[in-house]
Length: 190
Image 1: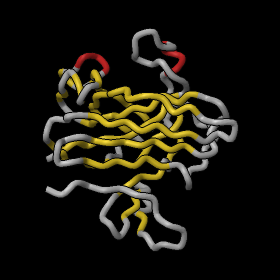
Image 2: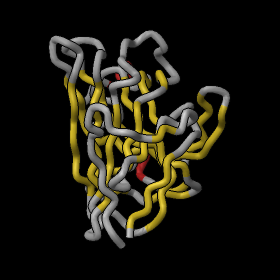
Image 3: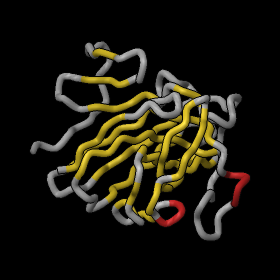
Image 4: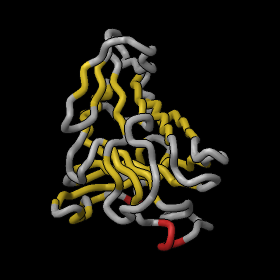
């Protein structure tokens, strides 16, 4: 299986956008998602929705690379980035990252009027600059082979569900993609 590739579109290059999910498909077959929905907890956090995005790619060696890019967010702020996996059961970890709650039966969550079973994995932090722009890239793996339905999101601060973190005050979700809650992208790991 060929790896899924992602890249930025050049100015003036044509692309197709699915208006429901914000998914962008380009000529090289790669995908990335615009951060096209404000989160389900804080609806007032600033963000340039048309320029912020999440890119991902999978290699044949079962490594998932994810890059979160925020544009026009609050200046000099930390946003913890995470993944919601929609599932019935989930492993205790995803690559080198522990699953919130330790895995097993997926937790029932209701957000934005939608109820789904999910498992969450915390990945890292985007720190924005004085203009509110920042990015974070992570390589996860090896990841177990399979097909994953998931949604990416960014929290209001850093330290939710991690040792030494900021606690519950940092857990609200500011941004999500594809969104709204329960709308998933599918990633297949060979």
